[in-house]
Image 1: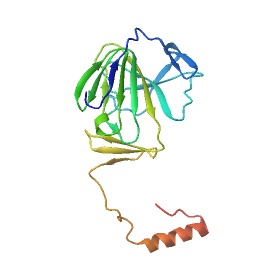
Image 2 (image 1 turned 45 degrees about the horizontal axis):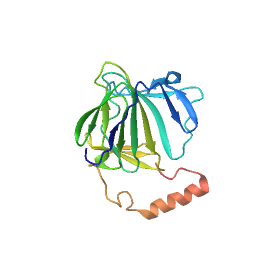
Image 3 (image 1 turned 90 degrees about the vertical axis):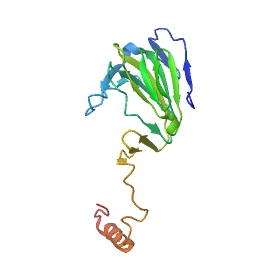
Image 4 (image 1 turned 60 degrees about the vertical axis):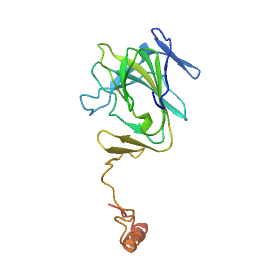
Length: 193
C-alpha cells in the first residue's frame, strides 16, 4: 500500500496488553459508546478503574467496534499520526488504496495528510477490539473527504471546506472592534458575539 505501513504480527488470542510499565487485561475494560452518535458509528472506547495511560506525547485508546459498525467517518489528520493494533476479532480498513481486511494481530500506521486517510468497519459477526495510538499535537485539523468537512481540534468546530471566506471578512471596521474592546476593558462586557 502506498505510504502506508501495514505489518501483520503473530499475536495469537491477545487477552492483555503492556504499556509503559503497567499491565492491563482486556477483561478489566468497560466499553462505552459516545452519546449522540449516529447509528452506523457505534465505536466504543474502553476505560476501567485504575486504567490510565499517562503519556503526554501520544494518546492510547482501547476501542471496541461492534459487528456492522463503522469507526469514524473516512478522515485524515493534518498534524497527528495514528497506529492501530487489532487485538481481538477483525475489521475491514478503507484507505486511498482501497479495502483490506485486518485480522487479529494486525498493526497499521496512518501518516499525516491525505495518504493517511482511513476508516474501519467491522464486517464480521464478533466484536473487534483494537488499540488506537495517536500523537497529540497541541492542535490538529481533521479532514473528511466524503463530506467535505474539516474539524478544528481542540476547538471542536466543524466546517465545510467549500465555504471559505476572505482573510479580511468581518474585519472591514477595525475601529469599531477596537472601540468595543476598549469598552469591554472598562465595563467587563463581552467584546465579540
